[in-house]
Amino acid sequence: MAALCRGRHRWRRTIHFRVFTRNLTGKYDYDLVVIGGGSGGLACSKEAAQLGQRVAVLDYVEPSAKGTKWGLGGTCVNVGCIPKKLMHQAALLGAAVKDAKKYGWQISGTVCHDWPTMAAAVQNHVRSLNWGHRVQLQDKKVKYLNLRGSLMDEHTVKGLSKAGKETILTAKNIVIATGGRPKYPTNIPGAMEHGITSDDIFWLKKSPGKTLVVGSSYVGLECAGFLTGIGLDTTVMVRSIALRGFDQQMAALVTDYMEAYGTKFAWQCAPKRVDRLPSGDLQVTWTDTQTGNEHKDTYNSVLWAVGRAPETKALGLDKLGVKLNKKTGKIVVGADESTSVPNIFAFGDISEGRPELTPTAIKAGKLLARRLAANSTELMNYDNVPTTVFTPLEYACVGLSEEEAEKRHGKDGIEVYHAFYKPLEFTIAERDASQCYIKVICEQGGDQRILGLHFTGPNAGEVTQGFALGFQCGATYSHLLQTVGIHPTCAEEVVKMNITKRSGLDATVTGC
Image (cartoon, rainbow, N blue to C red; front, side, top):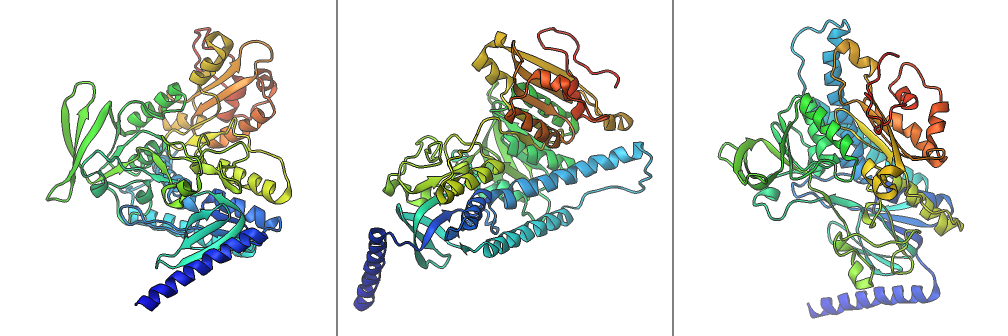
């Protein structure tokens, strides 16, 4: 045994000596090592390899508290954007079936939804994406390592396999793109033991049944929306406001539509505990924060959507002196994604002050790779990033919220053009369109540069993606008026707006 221990110490000394000598000579195993195989990390690694760099990617998925795990591709591919949009589509199809009867389709028998069929199809698609990412890395000569990565110094990464085997890699530059994971509340008994998160919902083999969604972020509202849409009894518990950080007028339209659509809301309520009953159901106890009264109800599932935490704890950043925001746990970075330690970079959800969005991580990763590998000087522009909330009535925006525009320019320094419109598709189906709304926030005076655009309605993301280009070109209200609309579309209503909030006139669109 003593001999074995001496052997281990010799092995460790050899490894550290090899690392030390490589750092002195400047010879590294790789030009770039990326820790994190999500959308951003993969984009960065492939771009660097295309530019002639020797690149390795370390990716390891720690199973969720419920044991859910998945393959290469990160949150977006496995437990985020992709499965979310597909399940949102399932819900939209349910609404379309109801509309179809008004349009003359003869649909006989009871129409119902089968969770296992949908889940299997979504999960199979995600697995195909996992495989596709592995093939792409191989084609682009990026070394993929299914290892949990941590930093030993500014040029050295330790990879740990599931079996506990260590692999040491050295690199000229190290990039951290590990993203984040959903949080559980730590002060609520039974929360982790009995609840699930967005890391689990898309991989359930059977229907979650009657569900309580705790939290009203975009994740919570999107999940509640598609659960309601496929026919499940769904309640959203909101402690304060919905869609914090988004324009609050638009947030109210989204939740108003959801309530009319069938989602229940428990406003100004806070969960107190979760208990499993002998029947297997979950009894949730909560408090009405306005009255102080306590309430109880039973559910089949409790989904926590109370925020996300950055995956920084296991990286060994404290030992290297990588600066973190103590409140959020995120890495403090410069405009060029550099950290406080030379040769170590970070981007995406792991970075302080960055949008938690897949497209920004992908673009930031590519630009970082070009700066490291091709002497580029182009920085990521985080202004005017468009995004969409895939709730039953979709909401998309780009630029400033009305609240933020007022804060920056003053109430008298902005002009808000707005319109309530009715999608043509809603007419025959006799659907309520009272929450279909557009507003464009402009600077007051001059050419009226557009500061923000907000849209609720069908295909909101598709509509807003096009207008987002205008923001990069300095779009003004005059440019909107000069643009010919495509008739009959919802998007054309954006270029027809002429009523300001300030005027007090009725903003309801009538006629073509």
